Image (cartoon, rainbow, N blue to C red; front, side, top):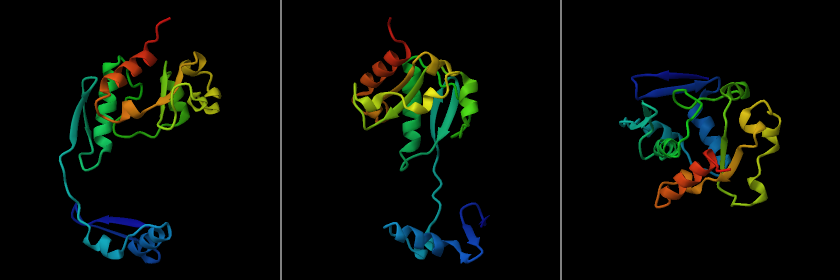
Length: 174
């Protein structure tokens, strides 16, 4: 499969069968979606200014609306900073980390969000996955925290609750 950028906003994709648009459309329709070759033909890139956020003295540029992902990243980083936490992954964009890289960062706390659990729910226990990585300080100290991420990942009136929740996880009182 090849991708050719024609002028920065127009692209052409092809594979051994010919037009990838037809192949992609067939697959989407088999999954119950709706996409046609005409959708590909009429698609145009809309250039937008990125969302800018500050985090740990750096400027973070991320996706602007109508995507909500960039705003949520900026929001989560702001909450983490307000709660006194530091993201040990100091990488640009959206890194895909091998487990070895996570081990090398030696996180003191691992926060894992799930939106389908409540406090005290057995599903909020750390997964068996983490138990295999006892060399990670957070795992060794029992500080892999699985929590309902709704307040922390959805901007709204519960922002204070989210900061307090994150601060309690990061800085527990004995």
